[in-house]
Image (cartoon, rainbow, N blue to C red; front, top):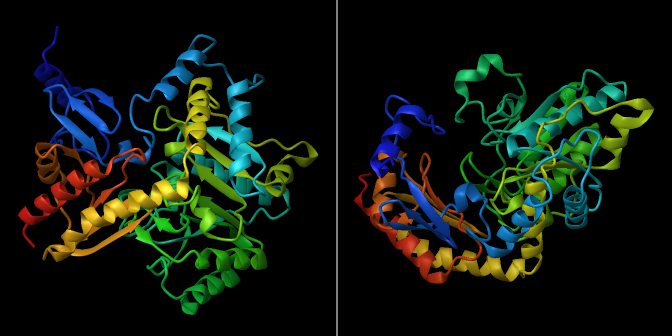
Length: 428
């Protein structure tokens, strides 16, 4: 039997982790088990998870309801191809998603991951316009500071300058970028920003298939919060210039911003919406692209078919996990639970405002952000959090929290204290 250290040595030798160098890998910690909001390492240390495993494990780990749902489906069948077959977990999940998302979204396409759901959305938009006799509409407008995934089409609509995909620029479709929405959830709307979008649409609408944006929060591009009214106005501009509106709710969906979907902060509906991450409560990989009848039937009329079909599309185990997660979510008072979480994070992170290294502290729903004046070194700073008994994974200038919704106030306070201590030890 291998020792824990032998496993870690093999990991370092064999496995290429995300956003990690093989020659100079950042530290990785061997997990033994995870229950509730805590992850236990093989050496016995227990960490409070402030990341929800990249924002997905909203009900905590090893939840009995989630476990039972997957176990029950496993006794029936783990997978069956979705081409030519269907199954009850997928049908139930589609029905639930249609019931809780904006009213005009009536069709559901399942895929394996959030990034692929964005690929699907972009393909839907291009194929829709092709069927409408407008084949030149093949490009997308999107704000800078956005992030939509690491696959090729998704990379093309991520921030082209400060994002993580600069090396691929020459190989990507050259999309059309506008400025990021001005920050401030309650800040007055700036007409000049909308004027920029109007001008961009007016000059390029004959080749624009869609406008894609993360509603209310630009996440991995900087954890930027902005006024939802911009989205209401962008919807009107999309309608005026015959452009599809695409919302990427992969990170913001299922309660993270204090409403079930960030779209619910607005009074409009997108034409296409992507969901993932928390869809299955963090148990299995699954995403969905929802659209309206205009797009779905526009592609399908006259014998058209949508040209996409992942092998594991609509996986029954993943759909069962998602059904269980949505049932749990329906038992919450989202507004009350997430407002409480926001208040706890605000209290826990506010002391960081007094530190010289800190530029700003901001919270929205289940998102708490400490923005520093300069970027941190992940390889150096993450082990410091582990030593303090918490799991926090900073990026760039941001140290942030996206905890499970079931986290206690005491655990939030521990996370806040650890962040304050580690920042205090950093030099300006």
